Length: 255
Ligand SMILES: Nc1ncnc2c1ncn2[C@@H]1O[C@H](COP(=O)(O)OP(=O)(O)OP(=O)(O)O)[C@@H](O)[C@H]1O
Ligand SMILES: [Mg+2]
Image (cartoon, rainbow, N blue to C red; front, side, top):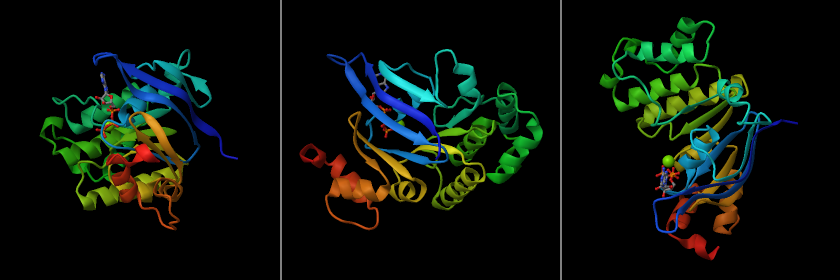
């Protein structure tokens, strides 16, 4: 039996600033097992990034609980943060430093035992080793994304959060990147939580999906189960594109 690595119960986030407040994430519950790739799927503003930010302890939930490795963030923050990592557009890199220097800063923060070797291994794997001396503000967005992915793997995390990791990659590099991530995930049973607006990518990458709309879960399961559940027809193959169009178009109100 694979262990439950992430357990989320009744997770809710309310923000002030709109009349009467605003519930961005509304009572989410789900479990992610060791070695699973879970996709968070939903239209713009559905609450995906807010959920990931709570799972990373970057913002505090309004209510509900999060357990990672069976532990609560309160009292175990450092222990949990050493074993997880993330890649997203909100990662802060120092634009004055080179790509290599930035990774060295993160390697030190995570107490990586052989930082030079680790940085070289990752930069070679993501094919940006030749950019190591380039300042971060001179990188193209696709290059910066791959640097971000190297950063996300610097501490050999057990759980990896990827918020739209392939959004700025061209189709060829995106395909390569998915293969690299799948390869790493298989090598050491890495658990991954993934968001993307690329439906074909979610079908290929994810064992399990959580479909969000206006902060609420409206379907969970394998890509095929979610497709059957939302489209209400028997389909042997997932068709998330059709699912997404139905949800975003508002048809979920009548589900
Ligand atoms: N700090 C904040 N203060 C107020 N509202 C916020 C804050 N952060 C997010 N929101 C709102 O919460 C909702 C969910 O945002 P979130 O970023 O989680 O969506 P998302 O599913 O990641 O969307 P996208 O696909 O566009 O990335 C949005 O309506 C957003 O405007
Ligand atoms: Mg988002």
